[in-house]
Length: 137
Image 1 (tube, rainbow, N blue to C red):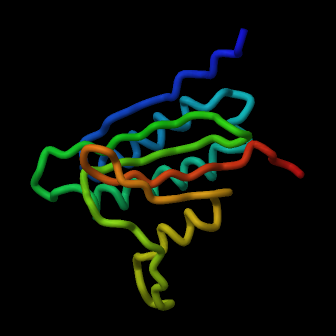
Image 2 (spheres, rainbow, N blue to C red; image 1 turned 90 degrees about the vertical axis):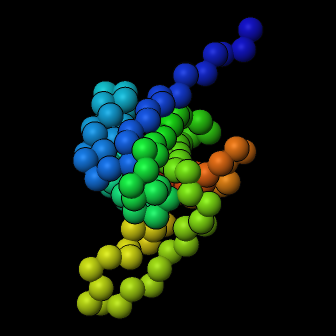
């Protein structure tokens, strides 16, 4: 009989800056206790950056849009997908030293073992990033 995989954790938050903290906390609490020392900081930073980008660039400012998060383990990684209703394709920027923003996807690129932007079937965009479970060597 095949092993039944874990059910992914799934949340929806309003496209509002206060949701960044709520999303970060929800994702951290969903991690198994044994993995928290190894993944908590990087996963919290990934969550913050991706949710912030989704709110700033993928949602309507005055709309009632939701940001959706899914967290699941697979293939030696913990995967986080952050989805928004926007149609744009996020790409890393290359800000100058004096810029106060524009480094979010550069952080994602440096932390994640892999990441990609995927269109959603009905409407919107998802950014998916994976953190390796092969820590400490």
